[in-house]
Image (cartoon, rainbow, N blue to C red; front, side):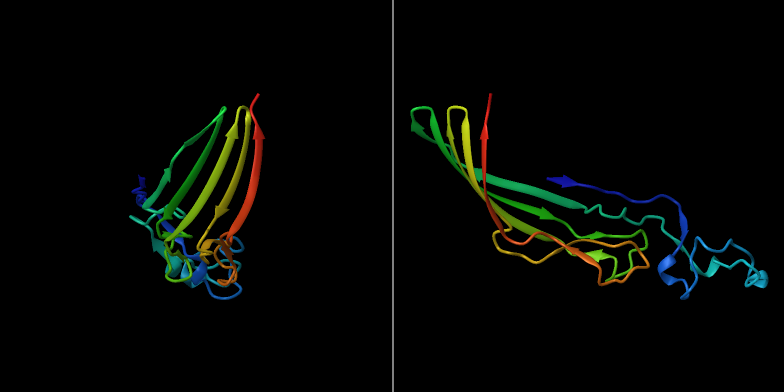
Length: 165
């Protein structure tokens, strides 16, 4: 289990998501409102105080819990079933915390393995995201299409074979 209390100190930044169309924070230097338009732009109305905001991609709570049991089959062989649950708390994807475009909901995932070991050999059957939960794990940078989200992996099954030496 982990608890993260990630809060920003005193900081003000230009909220690029709020800038008018065609204006980029990198394109024009800052100037006073009276001089705006002469090769510069007044960014002061778009400044945001981020003091106390949560760092991006830093959920407050995460935890993993698992349960396994090792069955001794004799002859240097074991069989180990395991079930695991992992939880990732809600989090922001930018410093500006604009809901809902910059917000990722919390999610929990179930996974399971069955491992057969014989001497130096190991064969493992695994399943991930057993409930086939649809969840968003990330987003593109600010100013991009808000529908550009990264979805987490769907249900997956597989086999791993390994040998220790």
